[in-house]
Amino acid sequence: MKHVLTLLLVVTGTLATAPAAISVTATAQSTARPTQSCEGLASLTLLDTTIASAQRVPAGTFNPPRPLPPAGPRGGLPIVGLRDLPEFCRVAGVIRPAKDSEIKFEVWMPTANWNGKFVAVGNGGFVGVINYPLMTEPLSRQYATASTDTGHDGSSASFGLGHPEKVIDFAYRAAHETALVSKLIVAAYYGQGPRFSYWNGCSTGGRQGLVEAQRFPADFDGIIAGDPANPMVHGSAGSVSKYVAIETTPAALVPLSKLTMLHEAVLDACDRLDGVKDGVLEDPTRCAFEPAVLECRGEDRPNCLTHAQVELVRAFYAPVRNPRTKEQLRPGYARGGEVQWGDAAGNGHMVASASYGTGDFFKYIVFQDANWDYRTFDLDRSVEAADQSINGRLFNVDPDLRAFSRRGGKLLQYHGWSDPSIPPLSSVDYYNSVGKLLGPDEIRNAYRLFMVPGMAHCWGGDGPTTFDPLGALEKWVEVGTAPDRIVASRWVDGKIDQTHPLCPYPQVAAYKGTGSTDVAENFICKVR
Image (cartoon, one colour):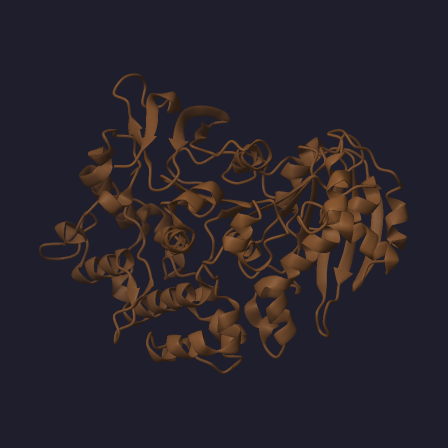
């Protein structure tokens, strides 16, 4: 226990409550080397933690248990080719903070030239796996990095049925426990804790980042939260309602060919509103395109929408509301992202994915009822019951970030305007709710939101969607230079063919009037 407590002081040394440890962490060198062997970490004793393995992985030889997606640029952190990874110490273990809790995790640490920093990466969907792909990029930049499966195996929500501790792990505990244990392991390996600790995640990982900032403000100095799955209860309610609407009216389903036609009509109507015709909408909220202009006059044809299809498109643009109180439960999808809806259209349900659309979150996690039928879902009674349930409340993300802000934490959030999974205005709503508590000066100092024109869910899309939020966050945390703009790029055939500035909300990029519109330097950020 003494060994654990000593390490804990080092790891949490940036806190004002441990002044003696601050001087220890501040001496970390930018090219620190290990003070003990990697294999020696296998005998490390940590509270509630079992180290399953600790082994050195020679450069370029890592063989993951599952194939990694192709390497390449994307929003957030890109995936780095396995051959490009440096030699590292790979530690795998299990944390059991409660009965029936089994949180698997891995920590990767470069064996040479450690930059003295730590990045934990988030997950997607219902998780169930270590996120090896996102661990590659920070490791390649000489960070120590970590990931967790959030306490269960597999991508289904069925893990939650009858397992309240596993639900808690998924909701918030696994990310927190992994952060604490990982920093202890880093400190044991290098003889000193990280000078700076960061979180980077998108989708579920974005929600995890917001939860970390709110519940555990001392875990990270800086947090990147991309396209966060927030709010979970009301967001999932919106997915179920869309799924049921399409299932009950299958003729309303818009095929991909018509979604492309719809998207082109939206661009024709709104692309020039920002002064530049570039195939994306800089600020979709300014676009008032009405899908009824495409309604067929007579029989159905490829270049028009049937009345049922027009109504469904309207429903996708519109907020999901409680039919009784008219309270908004979830914002609508932004205009300009219509083609992205087609990712799931071939399966007959457009945006609403099968797991969320059929209510697995409600069935297995919130209501704990394997016989619950999503077809009985009611936007009034069912949502109220979910909001009041014990497990539903676990997934509320409180907008009170005052503790994180006043500790000096920095939150960089981004969201693709063409996200077909999580409505982008969900992030705007959360940002505004935080602003009401922090006020304009404090939120500017602690929290920046970047809306990404043309970007789909976490990456991809029509516009420049590749950028480096970690580099921007580093400058903000470590030097005090707040990100007033982040340059994003578009890659075609392995080359950059366009750059564009991402601006902190509520600013947008405005063309200066001269020079190529494909060059970021020819734009300024301003409030319209």
